[in-house]
Image (cartoon, rainbow, N blue to C red; front, side, top):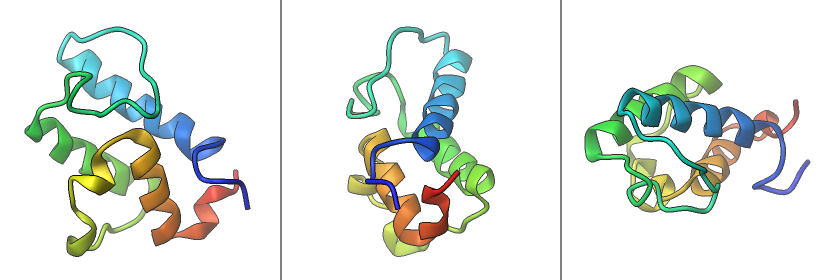
Length: 91
């Protein structure tokens, strides 16, 4: 299994975040470790991102895992996804 923070899930997460930022007319480079709130995501955007992650990866995020720490950055979301469904770490 690839190490968290590398490969396929990250690319899809970056695309989801870029879509939300684009809808808010925010452009610029995004790092997987940047705090999502510092690159321009508001609380409603975080809700949209959570729902998009569930749809994109066909998972349900348990209520107890919907925390600021798990949605702090793309790498944090990636780790959450892999904990929920380890099979998603493989392309």
